[in-house]
Length: 306
Length: 306
Image 1 (cartoon, rainbow over the protein chains, first blue to last red):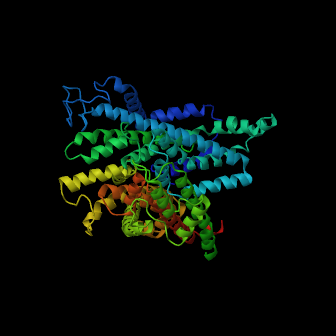
Image 2 (image 1 turned 90 degrees about the horizontal axis):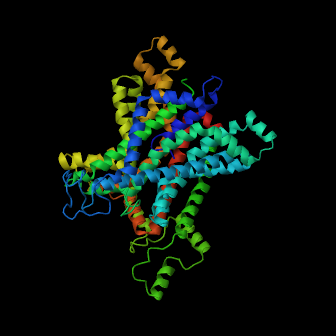
Image 3 (image 1 turned 30 degrees about the vertical axis):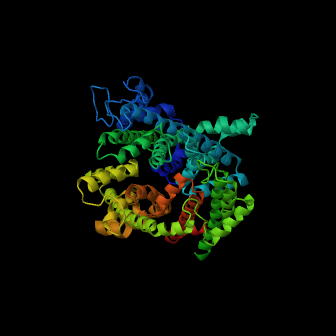
């Protein structure tokens, strides 16, 4: 399962270099990374844009004159009309597109956040346990990951969605539950080298249980790859969600998402172009911004070019 | 070499079986079914229908009947298209999907390689920036969006190409293949650019240049072949992406491949067809991965003895 955004390659390369880290430079690793991130113009601009989109999606609906549920009986299929407060026009049902767009962005972001959280949690815990326990259990666990890798996972997402209905919560979980494989691999590799370190030995000598060591000591030291992975997973999940919604298998009416809006807009583009352009622009901006942030973070945390 | 190939084939068989079992279990766990209509069927009719689809037998017997059927190439009856079996339906779609997938694969791989090499040779000059930008679009903008935009520009406004459908005319394939091939070409060119830059910095390239071999000959004779190795390892996952990616492309352009059957089946809860399509995809992808692995082992002898 190679990522849509090529994050596997990025992450593997980063993980390979991680052991070159030395922390005896006097400056905190995090502060150093932040300094380098701030110098990356594309990433900084992207952070502002993404924060703006998130804020707009969350509090924007308060400032829009129309709500999602209102139908303007005097304006069906209306192009952008500032006088009436339909800044982006209305759809075939007389609903304000700007309100719908904000609702859709909210949904897409929510799916991405929850699914990323699910996939990172599963991946980190699975990888850390496999790496720390080692031996036959490790071999079996990683063999399972290999098998899952070989399968066309988008089909499994579709099957899960078909079977368990098209409720948004299940959509989050279904996508998240199938996105954790790369994370598990990376975390396992890191754990294998971390568990030989002195501080783990010290913890064990101090009487810490396996669970404490894995969760308190090993996972805490994996922040770098986990952060990079999470930022690169979000755009990937947004794409998967919009892809499913596009096929009619994702978020259902009256809820909406960017993919659903694009799919509806594409059907009528020739006569009502204002229904397709705004969601498409938001989706592409979101994906571009998140990719730049992910790349910027990787560059900032990548020890090689220090 | 032969032993390596045999070992890989033996390792792939259980994966296929596990995948089939997994699909079967998940499908049978599903609540509801294609026969749950608005109006309940008379009990006698329902019993007959259930008997026809083997749903009245114990689960374990159903499983063995199904797996036995799959091994004989019989994927069971479709549950919504009553006159056809799943194998019939897939038989109609397979040639088209494969033709589409493989043409896109060949074209994308060739373009990706050329773009990667040109980018690497002109690293950080305008041809590189231009190509990286085009590639970026292919990776970030979801293919359903690219598909619709191309359809509108070339199909509706300029009318250079037919906007969709399939009637045996090659011009109808230009846009679908472009949409399908773009992200694949993008990823290949990214890989090729990276590994080519690495190879061009290697000592033996400097030696070759020092001996007075011309720039072009160094490139063709010494640089390209070793730079290809990471690209080859991506071909397997890449192909599986192309085959699953054709689901969207077939839906946008109204093409008669298995991707359309899959989506329609998923929407109509035709479990037999969904299961059959998934199994087909899994098997094809496993076989392709196997071929790529063997090709890889042939290119890089180190792999054989791991």
